[in-house]
Image (cartoon, rainbow, N blue to C red; front, top):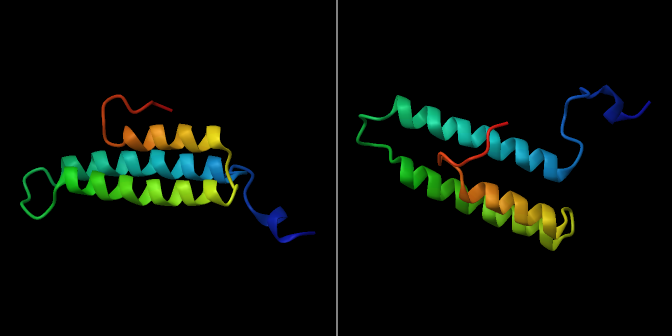
Length: 92
């Protein structure tokens, strides 16, 4: 019995699935933070969105360079990253 046989069945089975789940989760978190922190002067939605997008662009392109994800998966993930926090972000 291997280590991975003890993990839950609903876990992501590929880097693509894992990254997509993370981007979707961060999108929801950004929207929640925007609502919760709307009147605070110490937090900027636009800045948080930009930093999150930068993080994912670097991470996703790095995994593409090592061929952990395909070019098509990379393109799809980067398209999703560009829509983070925006109304056109796809609903799951």
